[in-house]
Length: 595
Ligand SMILES: *[C@@H]1O[C@H](CO)[C@@H](O)[C@H](O)[C@H]1NC(C)=O
Ligand SMILES: *[C@@H]1O[C@H](CO)[C@@H](O)[C@H](O)[C@H]1NC(C)=O
Ligand SMILES: *[C@@H]1O[C@H](CO)[C@@H](O)[C@H](O)[C@H]1NC(C)=O
Ligand SMILES: *[C@@H]1O[C@H](CO)[C@@H](O)[C@H](O)[C@H]1NC(C)=O
Ligand SMILES: *[C@@H]1O[C@H](CO)[C@@H](O)[C@H](O)[C@H]1NC(C)=O
Ligand SMILES: *[C@@H]1O[C@H](CO)[C@@H](O)[C@H](O)[C@H]1NC(C)=O
Ligand SMILES: *[C@@H]1O[C@H](CO)[C@@H](O)[C@H](O)[C@H]1NC(C)=O
Ligand SMILES: *[C@@H]1O[C@H](CO)[C@@H](O)[C@H](O)[C@H]1NC(C)=O
Ligand SMILES: *[C@@H]1O[C@H](CO)[C@@H](O)[C@H](O)[C@H]1NC(C)=O
Ligand SMILES: *[C@@H]1O[C@H](CO)[C@@H](O)[C@H](O)[C@H]1NC(C)=O
Ligand SMILES: *[C@@H]1O[C@H](CO)[C@@H](O)[C@H](O)[C@H]1NC(C)=O
Ligand SMILES: *[C@@H]1O[C@H](CO)[C@@H](O)[C@H](O)[C@H]1NC(C)=O
Ligand SMILES: [Cu+2]
Image 1: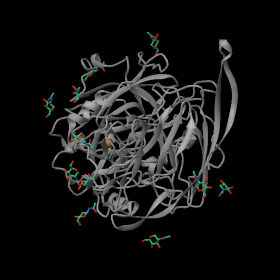
Image 2: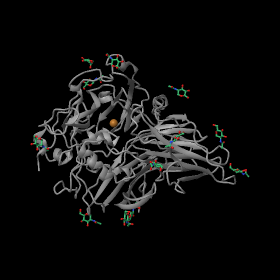
Image 3: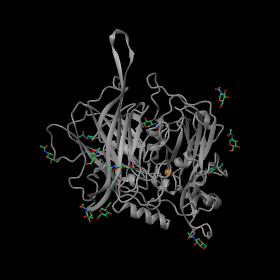
Image 4: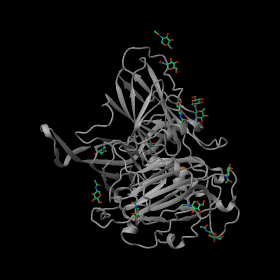
């Protein structure tokens, strides 16, 4: 149950003419029971991990500035953690969730209460598991309404609808994932995409399992769309209806009028829709935006569908209209067109503050690589290596005690503070040809340490190594960041900065580094703690496209990391180890044989 009690009450400003603006902040309590639940799809009954038997899981509904306590009871078979995606959690990384970064997993039979502190976020975010690939089915929407007495910067809609898009795996995902990791093979691919838990009419065995949304003619609705898919960016469209994007990642954007959207895993979008078409039924459809080479056929080609249906009398036997505006898989022109239109609202009521005096610059390659299976006997590129990914040629390896605890308690041997600001070698990053030396990577648990209040600029450079150039939606915990630049080819540090948008860059928590291109982000490091930072395609995250940054304390109580809450899950006695590449380990011996 969700019950809300006022946290504190103050009458903010007494406005002339006797009008008062109350500014309330509430505390909410939720209990989440994580457990196995049987579901039948694609004619196969299987067990999936859920919260309270629901897929997608329960919604969290708060107002801006509220706090939610979520007690997670693990009744599943393996350790789990939960993450509140896009919630900044000032000074409170203890409740952020990524396993082995800010906590160890909640063991089966145990419970842990997360304190989720909302501050400036407004719109839609989401929560999801952050251990192994359990987030495939353990996720749900977070709805953040404006504070009482304030409104969103668009007319009040007549209704709301939450759309959670997810991926469906036919087999047992955990078993397949572990097998693939151990053998160094390609990680699992999904068998379909779901809309609010349903695959829709275009899937096998679909009879009567499609998600339906009823609308009234003439009404305007706010759609809160979440991409909870494990590994695919998606195009989404609704037949014959125009979409107006007004928010993204818990912040407002300048309205984008469009007949499709592109949404990456991790991203959330608020979209207005007016039901202004002839009474009837219309498909809401999604399918992958793939930027992989055409020859790579491993991706899931399925079309997810749900039905928007008007209330009223009309011919129900006519089949729904499919959205012709939904771009096809490899339509990079459509992908770029949408992405380039995103701008923050940046007005008086919703100002932005893009750092201009940069104190820390980083240039980071994000890449597909190969990793030695066993560093002591590693010769053939074909047989002695496994697939990996890296940032600046470091392939992240989780420590056995989470980075946050090691940092807070000053424990040595779990991580090092030498994440490089620059790649070890410069080469033609986007070339089709590549040097074997650049392909082989090494593991490490290297973090970047930032002083409090540092203004950071990062250029992410995608590479074409192994022919593996794709879009990478990069996600940062604890902070949102501004997208000041985006471009194609190798970043040119003289000419490309001239095109930066410092006026109305989008402020987001997840954004795609384009295939064969670069992305420049800026943010101020003003949240003390340890924050994970990774590609939100889980196949890349698992292979090592991750790091963490530590933001040091700012010198006052308010700008310092809080002490841990009671009952943090213990790192000792952890059942099993995290699912990640078993290879290499050569360079960081000292860090990896703690036991
Ligand atoms: C989940 O289930 C538990 C136990 O049945 C219940 O107490 C709790 O309120 C439920 N949580 C939500 C969010 O529905
Ligand atoms: C769930 O499904 C599995 C496999 O089909 C089956 O063995 C098990 O009995 C089911 N459990 C429940 C509670 O129905
Ligand atoms: C939750 O865990 C605490 C220990 O951390 C324990 O004391 C408590 O009984 C547990 N609560 C439930 C409902 O399992
Ligand atoms: C759907 O059914 C067809 C024909 O039986 C089969 O070839 C295909 O693999 C199935 N797709 C999925 C995702 O199960
Ligand atoms: C939807 O639009 C198409 C053209 O894009 C048109 O052919 C069709 O009749 C429309 N459907 C309805 C139900 O209005
Ligand atoms: C998805 O829809 C497109 C038409 O837009 C069709 O060409 C394609 O075959 C469909 N894919 C599947 C797997 O049904
Ligand atoms: C309803 O639609 C079906 C299928 O398009 C069509 O065969 C039928 O004639 C329609 N009925 C009416 C009353 O328009
Ligand atoms: C994007 O598409 C719209 C509509 O098709 C078109 O008017 C616009 O010029 C395109 N913009 C870019 C940057 O390609
Ligand atoms: C930029 O920041 C540096 C410290 O990092 C400071 O010394 C300098 O005065 C700042 N410049 C401006 C224009 O604010
Ligand atoms: C790595 O290779 C060496 C030498 O062949 C062997 O002794 C060792 O057991 C191997 N380690 C693993 C983890 O397979
Ligand atoms: C880098 O590689 C790309 C793709 O092969 C090529 O078009 C470009 O000319 C190369 N740039 C340089 C500086 O060699
Ligand atoms: C620009 O890049 C070149 C290498 O491509 C490097 O030598 C130079 O230091 C860089 N300049 C700045 C300002 O970062
Ligand atoms: Cu990626």
